[in-house]
Image 1 (cartoon, rainbow over the protein chains, first blue to last red):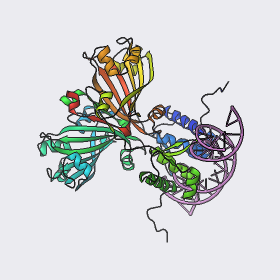
Image 2: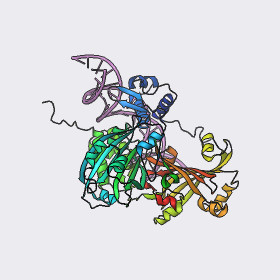
Image 3: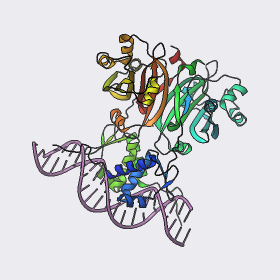
Image 4: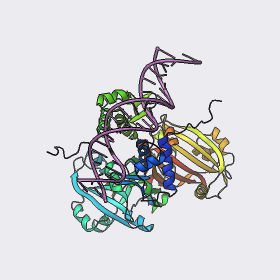
Amino acid sequence: MEDMELQTEAPLYLRIAQELRHNILEGVYKAGEQVPTEAVLSERFGVNRHTLRRAIGLVASEGLLRVDQGRGTFVADISPTVAVRYPIGERVRFSETLREQGIEPRYELLRAITLPANARIAEKMEIRSGEHIAMVERLGLADGRPLKVASSYFPLSRFPDILARLNETPSISRLFAEVYRCDHRRRTTLVTAQAVSPEDARLLGVSYNMPVLVAEAVNTDEENRVIEYGVTRFRADRTELVIQPENLSG
Amino acid sequence: MEDMELQTEAPLYLRIAQELRHNILEGVYKAGEQVPTEAVLSERFGVNRHTLRRAIGLVASEGLLRVDQGRGTFVADISPTVAVRYPIGERVRFSETLREQGIEPRYELLRAITLPANARIAEKMEIRSGEHIAMVERLGLADGRPLKVASSYFPLSRFPDILARLNETPSISRLFAEVYRCDHRRRTTLVTAQAVSPEDARLLGVSYNMPVLVAEAVNTDEENRVIEYGVTRFRADRTELVIQPENLSG
DNA sequence: ACAAATTTGTTCGTATGTATG
DNA sequence: ACATACATACGAACAAATTTG
């Protein structure tokens, strides 16, 4: 006989990682709590601290643990956060969508600046490269927890005072509807996924290399002119984009 | 004097990782080529092999390098693979979509079995839990390169001979249209992102922890009965889901 | 078909640096 | 200032997979 164990014994660090996952999922270590220190755990598992650290690093990269230098290692709070169902259709309204699901929406303004459009953005906005645009970056929260980071671009030629207006009317949907009196429709949405950037990781409260859903949207007015181009990065673990015909006919 | 550099010097492994990225992106190490061995590189950078390995591990986790035990470390072939634009609408046709973009589609059958529906799948398919269903898992390739892994579920009550039929008619769209004579429409698509599972990583040829786009689809016939439930995992780096009104009205 | 060399993978040990309370 | 806890780095040895002779 060739061998008894087709599944060759796994490396120590993998078995320890599995044990850690199990303890977290079984509630031996509870959400938010500190797990024993590396010294204690390596002693307990009877391995070198490096081996233990490797296991922790793996589990942390999966998002179940959070490691803070000088403080300790903590069970990530992956509480029963039901995913937000986010319909993508002709009208996409963050605040309405969330409120319909009993979730309290909030925006935090991160940046609001003007700049010349680079080639890529100009193409998407159907303007000349170098034309001045407004860029607004906001953190979208659901029940106080980070859900998305949205970068939006607007043509200044059409909305010269948009940055000032945004202070009074923080909702972009309402800004278009009530101030500029133009309808705001989604022409196209491109969806892909990426590993989170370091900056977004900080804003979204996720660890490095977790996936984000990236939605690139072009919004137009009634005459099909581009009035907003936006790139939104959603926490993948909290978001489910919903695509169905009804979204687009109504 | 305490120090000259307020911006504390980054750790060695990070600086080496940066250097490796730079060399890859600048073409010093070309796509598919083997990079020097760990022994050579650690010597060259003047660091311990562990430190060098950590840098390589980081860059590999970003998808720029592939490490094969016993063979060597290679620059990942992230050639100018233009993302496949994959429209999500009322009709979703893998083969047609790709051919329209000048890309040659192909399917490889991975599994085709029958099994009782668990609660989750039964709910999605609007059948009783435990009812027998067919499960078909296929690898979708674009110009010979892995693009997606699709798991599809069909009610056996409606299509008792579907597994046999699939051998003759490998295209599911065509199978419904030509054999079963029923129209095949997308009712809903839910899109999210996840870190790739170990098995999908192997099938898709990506490294562990890279993101995949997950599209969960419910397809119905003309009477709005569910005839297929599917979960498809797309390589995120090769896929751009496209959502626009035209997809759904026509 | 086998043995040796090559290359990456795992584990231990030791030392020192950095952040926190 | 001090102790605690995680972070980085070096060194040594052996295991596992692959390629080469």
